[in-house]
Image 1: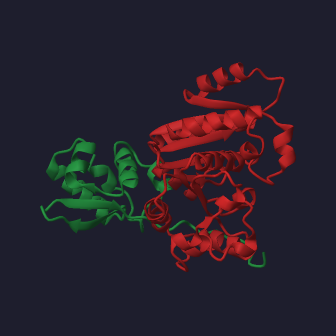
Image 2 (image 1 turned 60 degrees about the vertical axis):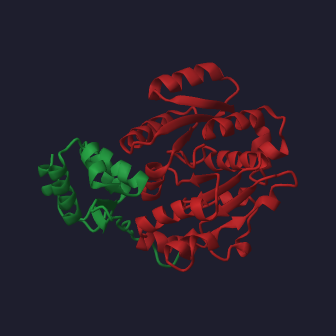
Image 3 (image 1 turned 180 degrees about the vertical axis):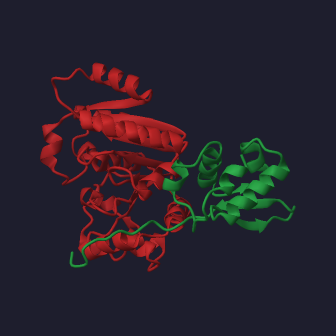
Length: 97
Length: 251
C-alpha cells in the first residue's frame, strides 16, 4: 500500500476529481479527511489498517506528493493531516462574452 | 439532523432548483434557519425562485472565490420574499448572473479549499440548522466537492432514459466519494405512469431509496419560477409530496 502513492506524480493540491480516481483504501481515507477536515496520525493508521510507523511513512509521502498538508504538531505530539486542496482547471472561454 | 444537503441532477431541467427552493422554504416555515448556496456557477438561477434581483446582489459566491469578500457578505436574507408566515429564515448565497463574471470563473478556475472552507464557515458563522447546495448538472469540481462534504445527497431525475443513464454515473461517483446517505427523487412523472412501478424500478436499478415520485404539474409549470409552489399551493398534491421530501431529507 505505501508503495502505490510513491509512484504518483507530485501535484499542487488535490481536487475531488482526483480523489475519485484514487485506489482503495487511500480513497476512503481521503474521503474521510475531506469530510472531517483533518485526521490525526492515529486515525489515519486505523483508517488504513496500518501500523503507526507505516501510516507515518505514508502520510509523509502524501505530504511530499502534494495531497496532504501537515498542519500542526498538537500538544501531545500527535501529527495532524489536512487535505491540500488544489485549484480547479480553468478553460478557454471567449473573452467577449 | 443533517447539516449539509446537496441536491443534484445529471441533466438540466429536472426541477432541481425548484425542489431545493421548496424544501428550504418548507423547513424555514417550521422555524429553521436554512442556508442555500448556488454553486451552479455556470448557469445560476435559484435566486429567481427567491425573488432576489441582480441589483440587490452586492456580492456573490464569485466575489468570495476571488477573495473580494467574506462568504457571509454574499448571504442575503430572502425570508421576507417568501411571505408572512415563515417562522425561520432562508439565507441565499447566489452565484453571479453577470456574463463576464461567469466567464472569468470558468476561465480562471478557483481554489477548491476556499469553496470548502466557505461552505463549512457558512454553517458555523450563520448558525444554520441546514445548508442546501444547488449544484450544476453533470459532474464538475463544485459538484464533486458538494457530494464529498455533504451528509445527504439527493439526486433528481425524470423518468427518461437519458436521466437514468446519467443518474447511474452520479450514483457511482457518490459511492466512490463515500456520501453517508443518498436519496432519489423522480420528478415530472407523466400521469400515464404508475408511480409505484416507477419507484420500484428506480430503487431496483440503483439500489437506493426513492423518497418521492412527483407527478408532472401544470400548475407548477404555470407558476414559472415566480414563487415557491409549496407555499403558494400548500394543499396541492405536489406540495404535500414536497413536504414529505423535505421531512425525509433532514431525518
